[in-house]
Length: 98
Image 1: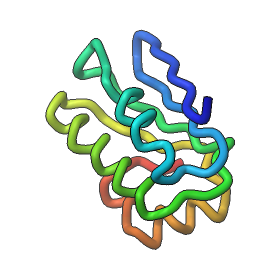
Image 2 (image 1 turned 45 degrees about the vertical axis):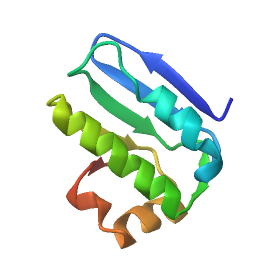
Image 3 (image 1 turned 90 degrees about the horizontal axis):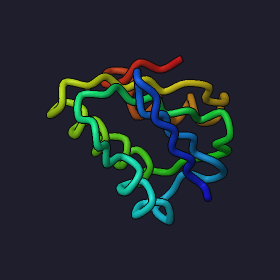
Image 4 (image 1 turned 60 degrees about the vertical axis):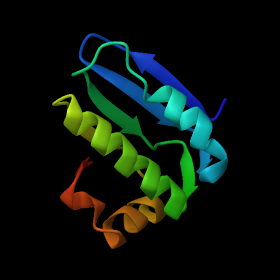
């Protein structure tokens, strides 16, 4: 499974494995459905080798949902290629990127 979801008391953690692209759209939508609205999200990209523009759009969908629930989003552990994509798209304006 390319997306592993882990729910803790503090946050919903999504681990994206491999290439983050449109093929993960349905799985991503299912993963961001949180039974506990208001819980923060952590998107762990430590195992993500690449992401395309559809992945950026999915992150913006997550942002919309998080805003509606007063939740925060952190993107962590991105490699240099993925981090460059995030910064080139100016997503650092919307997300905490570590």
